[in-house]
Length: 137
Image (cartoon, rainbow, N blue to C red; front, side, top):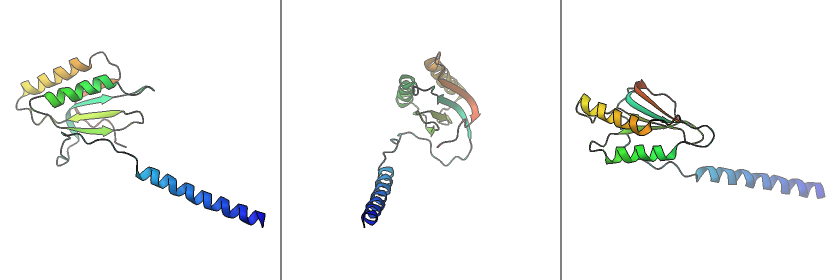
């Protein structure tokens, strides 16, 4: 009789444990939506500029990421970008088509400003006229 009672208690606890884990997974917060994410109508995978934030065990360089987002937000053309989350520590690619720029001079100025802003940080990789570097999770 004691064994039956113990087995029933163990079974009920395991069922409750599984239910709690499922509810925890449902309620996890998602990444906040960016206001100028690129529309998904363009199926091309080639981008004029890709800025990748990498990590080596201590997360991505958050100051440079904030500087990039602030620069894009304050830019007169408000260039759209696609954000690709690909790592466990916040590794992210910001992919720009730069279709908002009217000429090569504007594109080159934007690229120069971004390169200057990210210069010297080995955790930031910049690629031009490239296909997507990473697959999203």
